[in-house]
Image (tube, rainbow, N blue to C red):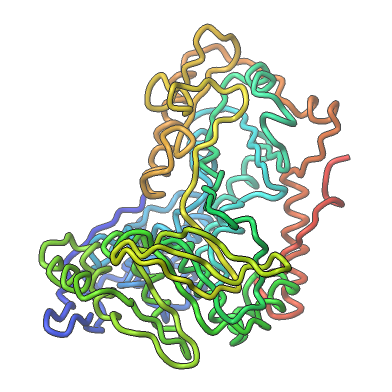
Length: 508
């Protein structure tokens, strides 16, 4: 199945009011094998329509993402692919130019899975997948916001990959490469090793008092960061008390704590100006639409002037985002407020006698003044540091020593050929679509490197794990966890009730 994006300008932006006219994009075709997805589309019924079309009349269908519903269109396309075992060719279109900013969250997945899928399709390899977390799909399971459940449906695609390739594909969760299995043991046990673990070492705030306790009981909290994680945190905390998250996959005990929150004041701090935010437009709009909350950009006249004057010069994606920012400039008021504040550099966290955060000291780099912000909870999301696993060759920049774009420079070391892709190889930059493409590329390279080599049967590390008595969770054990979570969730009308302990599912 191939997914192609084609875009055409919609001319919905009103230059005078800075508003986006609410009208659906023009449908490029009225043929019966063109399916149009909107926010109101029932995906289940449309999936049946797609099945009928493909079984009875057409060899190809076209799935069009209408406006902001690109995510739903992609989920639908993947569901069709899952049902037809990858034999379907679809063409996803949108009239929204630069649509990738809306689909990044959907493609924000484990790049190992994309590479694995490519290897299974292009070779006869057997593949072992290792996961540091006790369960798979960590980025989708824990990284996607709980009120964006439709994005998590993409797990079905990888579920299908494992179920169809049980004879060639194994998973070992709860395994720490470098501790439970050394890198040397790994390279001696396989013909090829692909490193695709991203950059999961979060940057520290590193200011006095940053190790203070953070509690939700305060009525005010501060988020340091200008990316989607900051928006997700603010949105979840500002909507939880309404009960809107009760159908999500947040564990009941965590949800109960969130719903008791008395937070009424949120401050989202950026160290630079509003023109440098890393939000995507979908998540930004959601924050401004939350009922009972007044969310505003509280910026200087100079920043406001610069934003407005920059609009005609911006490329489409950045322009759309800036239009939303400009439309929401003002001063937040009312019983529940969210303030977007810029040019603020955190300097110190002040704690009370019990060690709980009560105040954040920041420097306003625009005015040169020091400000004190009342704070009962401090969350920071300021990026990641690249981590090189023990035993993996490093260069002078403390990064993985790469021989070329995807091959690790192993020197004269014997053992497996070693490859790396994504953030662990090239640092934490670029959007997820980039890392997905890199994963597909490295799968092609591995398949090509081994195309003419004599077949062999590598030992793998399962025996090593058992000898070391390292408890791990297999794919079959994960399926038991998955089913139990879904069953428990149904009892209370939730998508699933996430388990938080997994000892009984571990290998003995």
